[in-house]
Length: 114
Image 1 (cartoon, rainbow, N blue to C red):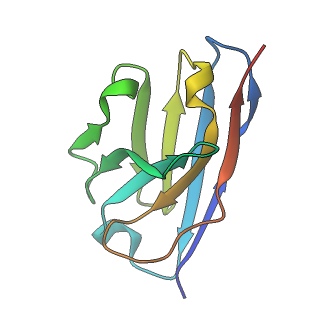
Image 2: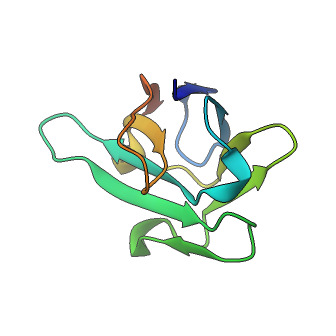
């Protein structure tokens, strides 16, 4: 069965960096595009970034362009989200998911605060 396990979240000061990881299993990872989503308190879940199955193309929401980088290692069945220049408004639970599959991971909390 499909499993997605996110890790790497934590508390960081504004301007800091974090690298999230999502380990996938139960499907042929290299065949699927992958995305990172986030959900802030009281807000709807939003799509943050997407990467194609080969990693050749990426897309980001405007608010994270130039600060976040999505990448993947198909040999390790893992997708990453490098987050730099973090802002308090980036505080949220971050989830990984393939747009082509219904399964969600449990998420990892990112808190940006002094």
